[in-house]
Length: 112
Length: 112
Image 1 (cartoon, rainbow over the protein chains, first blue to last red):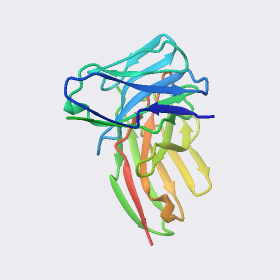
Image 2 (cartoon, rainbow over the protein chains, first blue to last red):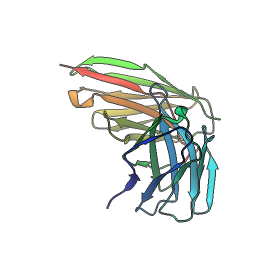
Image 3 (cartoon, rainbow over the protein chains, first blue to last red):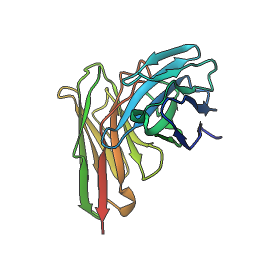
């Protein structure tokens, strides 16, 4: 049972480049989310989904897009990378909004 | 939206002492309050959670208390051990979506 799998673990981008962070879970969870973690700021919600075909914005959605075509996958797209998007990104999934959220191992992204 | 404040930002205790971390939240509709532990370079992992219909919950050396009237909740760790050293995050959710709002974290250091 793999849980929540994120790829890649590390990525360096140039300003203006685009990329997709992959997230997959094998627990049949309906709820999936993306967070970014910056020093001293905790985990901030970027986008979330309560099921296939349903997505919504979190606290810091600008510069990011998501889609949820299947229950298992929830990719995060950076449209035009900026240095301000340098961060550690975590994907999480849960059975419901009131149960344990399982996190992926994180992606450390550096935009130069 | 929900706002979660967490104090202190750093906490140093001697092995065997107790540690207390406090959080306040703003949205009276929040009804689910998890606590996550994050070791250096690792993903956050749930250590305990509490729902709004419960005032206190205990799991071995860890306990959480909730005061809905005052909108605050606290994590208590007794008989601290070096392996308790980590960053601890509180969070709050209304439960209707996977919209966990996190505090900014407390770095706990347990010294010998």
